[in-house]
Length: 122
Image (cartoon, rainbow, N blue to C red; front, side, top):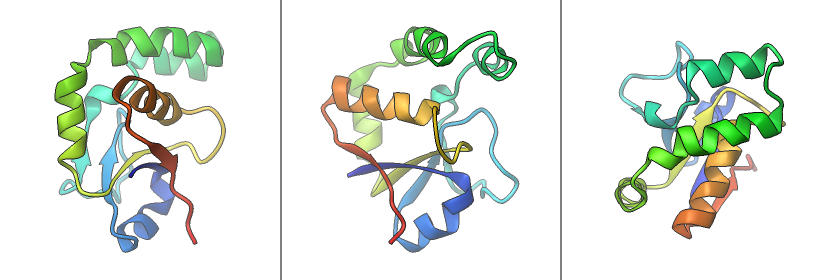
């Protein structure tokens, strides 16, 4: 299973045996450089900044993110890369609500046929 989550729960994910993969443009100071960081899944600065300042709504964000970021990924190469990671969890900053990790999760499910779920701490 592939999971998604957010950095504030990193310790819980590690304790659960998951392998963290950062998918944001930056990472928190406590995120070890020994962990994976797939910057190619991060939104561009232009998309991120326009969303944060209100120039893009959720729909506008998706309209740009999917073709500009996900559309450039070789699906088979990415699928192999993802499947080579034991118990992966894709991480970003947002705790709840709209977030690019959910767009990535939907894309992985729809385009690669792999199940993805938000990890729930027991």
